[in-house]
Length: 308
Image (cartoon, rainbow, N blue to C red; front, top):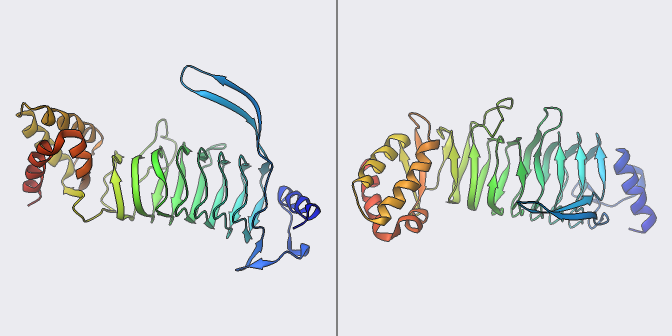
């Protein structure tokens, strides 16, 4: 694609105008924009606060109220893009560099981000009370580290071997989603911080059977509509709050350091468990890291007795 055509494409995308008359090739029913790029964001200034080093940038591009449909951006460099109140339907962003993407009040449907770099992106932005919607979106193998959320709706989304590390989904809701691969230090809430005005996250029909849950917390969630892994690394407990109470009570009678550490660990999970919680899950490696092998074996014996 020559430079004049690239400029025309971006001008039309900015205006929300059709691209059909530009004689672009079509790939799998989408206009082929693979490899198209935006300039890197400009750094305005860098400064340090008491909690972080901050880089202030001028975004590479801002889009307001446009609709993108049937477009293939695979392999493109779209770093630092900003979008407000836009619709994206049946598009591909596979293997795109979308680092530091910021979205507000978006509707993203039937779209793929397979292998995309979404690091440091704000995917849960709110604009005038409107959340982002991700419906039938594929995040497989996408890098989602350091992504930020106030609240967003994820419906029928796939997270297969996505990089989900140290993520707090806050007030985001999940329905009919599937997770595979490792999740590490991920937080799911029924309601996020100061998120009372947004819908509660009920975790409806969520499938973790192919996932590995390492230090994953479910806060204020009943989890009755969640499928957990059935393997040696995970212990799925029914009557979760009651099981934790019994385990904590038993471990408190022990005097070793491992038991005391496990009491502290389980007490955090108990804090966030709901009354009469139907089920919950513990990861055996997490417990071994916390209380040592001997402490874990003592706890495992107790928990398995509670399951029988």
